[in-house]
Length: 497
Image 1 (cartoon, rainbow, N blue to C red):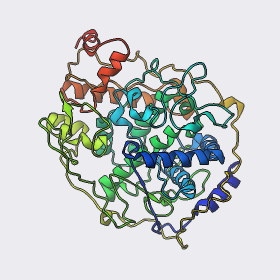
Image 2: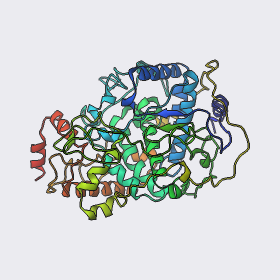
Image 3: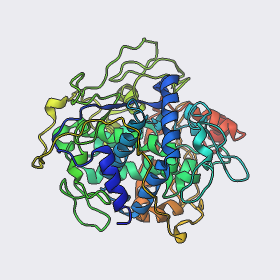
Image 4: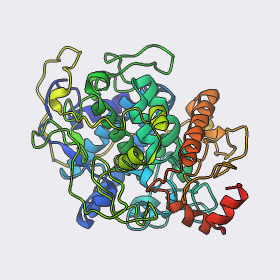
């Protein structure tokens, strides 16, 4: 493996390869990016800028690019990216021990992604501008990327400066409730929410070196959070689930070794242990013993027409939708629980949300023991010494891999935002935008599998609209259509709604 020497250097830097049962001495708390204070975001930008100046942006992009075909389209996907995130975070914490990768809860923005506060100068900047699709706002290192060559950070939104609708919080909640093993959970997320943002932002994000864009790290931190939520929905069944196959079609398990790292999948499974020294703001690691793994139930102000869930009623609803998706408590897939529980017929609960009325919560005490035997060795103590933090040399890609993406859709029919003849609520759920043929080829996905997953997502959207279910997060579709020079009413009329 070309990057082996670099990985040895990285392992020495972050203290990899520790006891698989060892509790982390300190844990990074990953929070939704919009919940960071201005000082926290400024610290994040400072760390990222210094990491980039020391070559770490290009090194992690190189690592991802070199192993790309081994870590997508199979059940290595989640554990590899969890390890990648943990290593990136470990390096960052050498520059500032307060650093934690913020995650981007993209589904709260799904109806009008281009309007997301995250894609503004306050955070990571917006669309690229002509002639080279360079991002010109957001934090400053955007103009100084060097992998695979020197270039600006590039983005090219996929809808004439706007972004087509993506996958909803309800879609994610349905996957969380229905998936019973990794071989089911992984494709339901990778072939929807994961690829959707890469297509939407395009530019560097549609390349194998997508870690160039900090959107990659925030997006994958959110995907990892969703995996952790799934692990804790039924720990006896899900927590140590490592079934499925690798890129060669061979069965995998907890003792399967990750590409490039040559460490066990089992070592990535438990946040708060064995170098996975992080947790999320809707769950707090058992390693800290400061709070259980139960969802954080905060008090919210009650409003008439509120959509209740495990986090309490949503505030700020107007005609059943949120006026501001930035102003919610918790995460979007949790926030819609109440609306689904009370706003849908029982047969759709059975079909899409079979556990919607299950209020059970689980703590660290419910996590089964690690099925793998322990590995002797002490836990690594955090080291904040910033000397010698220059990244190992990155490996450039082959010229053949630097192809220009195209936007040919992998569907048999043209994309439509709303299905004809399906009358829905005032703000209907729009169909997610399909994958492109380029994305499928680049990842080595099965086109038939992608089409089947997309067909199921269309069926899901039709069912939700036919039931007149009003998603609290669907209001953004009105501004998206308006930005495209139309109105919701005209678009719905043209679809016969």
